[in-house]
Length: 251
Image (tube, rainbow, N blue to C red):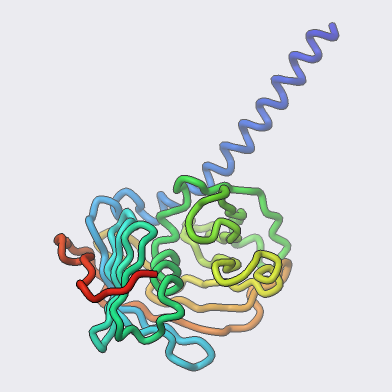
């Protein structure tokens, strides 16, 4: 009898564990399906203009081209300056507007853009999240963390809110640890809100972003920035698209 009970207990725990894992995998799968990930990946690259403001001041105004598999990208500024990334390497021209934020600009904005298509990337870990906000019935919500060694900032985390009616991401709270440590970052979490989705060759793309201060249990609290995306199109690229000039620096 004891042996039978032990077997039943082990089977039950295994079932619960499997169910929990499946629920977490289903969360990412639902969102990627809603965002037409496979259709997105069937294209080689995507290009768009991005104008970003924080605190009423323009922080970025450039054209971004990025491979849909996220391995390479380029930011082109109006003065002709470029930031190019290839995997984890970053190259930039000497006339870049802000040299200190080169790596941050290279990876942050393209990651926010590609975020709905990267939810099951290697190193991603999905965790249950209890959403106690007043509008929690409108969303399915889970927390994304990363395995050690993943990307430039593996200590980052995201609380992802997908609209329950269509499974599109509507907002994501996050911390940024690339410029500091996790404890400091968790004292000042932010959130991005994805708005005004438009169909781009069968793929829903948010053309307006709002940035907020965020507090657990309350959600979005104070708007701090915004971004407008325009002229979004899937394109083909050649070997020169992501080739840095001979005078480019690295960071």
